[in-house]
Image 1 (cartoon, rainbow, N blue to C red):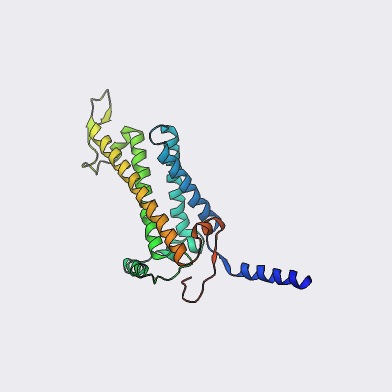
Image 2 (tube, rainbow, N blue to C red):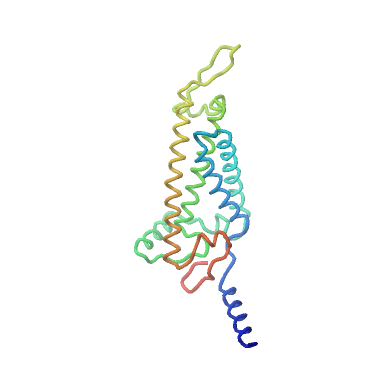
Length: 220
């Protein structure tokens, strides 16, 4: 009986030793909070403008946090750890098509590139939404006359912005929001593929923070 208990304890210790904490709590909270905030923003776009706007501000705040945490955060949260150049990213994608890509403990080069594109798209979506909230904010973009056209009223009425600029910003906002859906689909597809290829549940890892310890050939 005692030997059985001891053997079970050793097995649990071995299993625990095979796991490594990769994603810190702030990265995990950021990730799932962003998922929730974007979902709320998307589903309230037409009916609940106040909720939609609040969700947009939450998204903007989360993106700002991630940019800062990418500079000062834990090892695998830092951009310097996972961002690769175009050549390395292209080589990884080529290996992935061939089914020979190596396992990365943190973000792989394709995932890193997706993170950059997602952050840029979210930033553009949040900015265009903020500009739409108050028409006079369009006047803050005088360097973009092809998008924003200012129509100045008389001195008593003050300055106003023509409908053309507002419509253009609205179109930009909608295009970026739709682009986000495409990027999210690609991101989820990449997560599923990597989970299947490397026999590892990456979605669960973003909940627990733990991933399988690196094996020979893996990149830590």
